[in-house]
Image: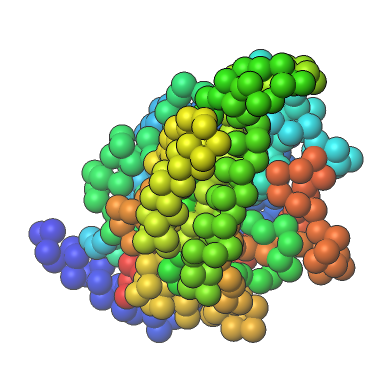
Length: 429
């Protein structure tokens, strides 16, 4: 009986292709819920929550999915929500991901749905704001879930909706984000074949999509260097070993790795020292100095080379100054790497939805995204969705992670249409 039912459903699917196309249905359903997507986003923007603390956000999402008849799992990787929608025909499994967390930023905009939420971060009271667009990502994926729930008969396979906490990083001493979701088997039961994700871009025109095959966002690592010198009076530097002078030479040396040893025509790379701690007053040469910074790479061979050279160079420079130095480099976040064949396969879908002239091949950027942890397990495609008003110049666009961050909501419906089309095109290929 199951075989007969499958055959009848299959022929129903074929016959449907002679009537209203999937694209027509997607467009109609997406346009019908555009106002709802904007309303959801405004609610989320007004009620932001920090990483691993997205309790109300998770309940808001779960309630919506349950109302759509989607199977829901809550509490994944602390506050994550996973929805499962099975189509009327068996097939592969597509995962769609949106991140939920906000940032410790006090909003400076005068929007009617401006965030006035405050919280504690690193022991300080500070405002909380969706200053990177994660509220947009959640609202768009909620919209995709609603559209696909009304197109079950057109789904050959299964769709897994992943609403992920802590993309911006878990609080100190906690696990979180995509890495923890993968550890808790979010890509299993059923096993995911491919995953799609998007990020709103406040500097790209509404109506555009930016993509790149291969490495689109950098791997990021944190390094910590501890230099041990010998304390002395500031008037008698020859009687001590200056860790501050050693630190200055180390910083200059690290930059020569990038400027003189890395083949930058292949891929970009960055070493930045973002923090120096040393000394307590003007006339004391301190005993120690600490440097903390970030490494950004877009190629794993280059990453290994840079890591190896830093580990070799830092203690050697310290030795020249009669100091001692140790360096620790974190595993960090992997390269956000778009699967080459999957990107090529789905490019026509992007072009069909946004228009070929509005789909732009971009250069890689040195920002990082933990979507990369999913891409280490299954083929993935991650792209950027335009969120800048057409009457705003690119140089005047608000920046991500700032108090003035703002997005043009008219671009959301393209996100809903594109993510829905990517899902159905892949499953029904």
